[in-house]
Image (tube, rainbow, N blue to C red):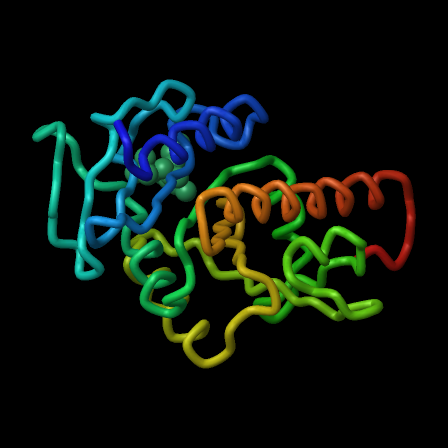
Length: 208
Ligand SMILES: CSC[C@@H](O)[C@@H](O)C(=O)COP(=O)(O)O
Ligand SMILES: [Zn+2]
């Protein structure tokens, strides 16, 4: 298999081992050199994906390639489509369900979560001193295309300060120009969430 699925399988394994994709949670996609994007099939175990666990779609959701005819695209495909439509430079998108992402989602106000001004933000593209970075936080509506519509409308109007968003009590969605960059961004954001939770538990003030 010499296509983008290889990097997605490796990333899924990595996230699964960190406990960010347990029990089939999460989904991954990458734009394909052959057109459209590969996305994980719905309900697959992310610790043991193989090349049959993906579907290639165009940006409107039309199936371009389905190695397993029984496979259905991720239930959250519409969110990936929204992000690819908003950001032509996004090459891969990872959606993970960590415990920390769900804890910090409680600390959002007015649809935004202020991130602490950690050095790690440089890896997410924020190089200024003491950056004031707000992560957009969306309601976890029962019908996923409704979440996707809100995401697309908001991100078109106001691109986020870092390539990521959070869905309340659900998980983070992170993107980058390549599968490798999206992996780095996901690790960095999850580090920041972990820091926020740890700092709160330690009673440190001014950390979000
Ligand atoms: C463990 S259920 C989680 C799902 O409801 C969903 O949020 C998710 O991330 C995975 O959905 P999937 O359709 O497998 O891509
Ligand atoms: Zn999810």
